Image (cartoon, rainbow, N blue to C red; front, side, top):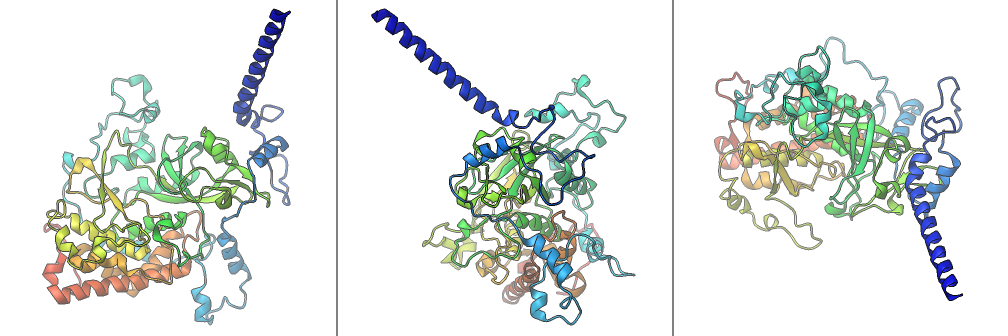
Length: 554
């Protein structure tokens, strides 16, 4: 009798174990099962068939089973920070009858957004668009020094065609793998995807050349390529996603957290500020207008959170944070140090969300990068101050320390200082360079999401490196003077450039006006340095002596 009870108990334990295993397997397979319709077609997240007219009133939602699963993740209501700016811009364009004339009040003009992306007014008749005219200016046509093999990030064998499977490997494919090549009649470079053309164009002096057609094509890829997988990026304080495309390219996605017109609250510390997706987009355009070309290509995109994130991710930690908000919007929050909770969830309308997509740089296994601590790094402390904030002679100490004691690195820091001040970016704690080029190369302007937070305040402490060192490149100084002229006004150039983005308007109008104001502050700081130390001691002539350049009056 005792033996019989023991056997029954063992059988019961075994059955419980099998049931538990079955439940775990079903939970793991649930994301795949819920995507299939009754006829084997994609179900919840795909648009309706072309034959059936779409219903205007109600959006297409996931199945009831999916809704129940998503709602189980939500323990409390979410605070939706998704944007109203695009709708506000459309309302302002369509319903502002009395305020649309030329006699509008100045206060009303200051609050106006950049006009909607379509239709866009043509450039004035008889005149070239300001942006095109800028890029034809002699200051934007100065030639680089001749490039030797050591000045190229990659020495590409032009006889090798792109192998799509090689993009999944950490190294270049051996040229003996002839069966892997694309069976096309294209020349080898033309067979490369645009992200790879961008990578092989990097050299000692720039991330991309002024008129590289692959950059515009890459920007288009960022907004049109099919997203095949999504994963959370490790590290960092706020949520960022790594998105992989059908052509094997990758980009860093920063979702929208603030509306266009919102300013950073005055009581926020710079290190707890939101990272703004539109700041990343605007930073790329500003960097190109300044002719630095040190920011990787960035474009805005409307992403379907269901079809292009939840349904393609294999990251279970990300997938489990999706839920349906009380307003029936799809939301998620991921995992990160700041603002990754139900209270700070990212919510769509109902499942569409804006974000920025920044093209990846070459993998570190192919092109190593060195990370440097910014000498004018802030303390990132609520009470302590950094050394440069209390020592007016701090720059003299920096200039005696490698790599700032020789070469062009101190001038690169000044370029980055001007760039950050125009954006209002206080969060420049480190910077990176390509290891292959040593110390004689440019600084990569990465991670610009905390720019464009305040249009009503100019953070003068960002300009301290320029005020302390009183050094600037001649090319940078002349371009800044050019951008202060009425015919090349920085705000107008930025407005024109940003209208090309798919999620225009990118910046609130007061942010554009703030850049003009800050540009005048930069020129006044350089002028004060010249008056104090002399032109030749402040302005470093970086033009190629063999190239024809046009200078302006001092």
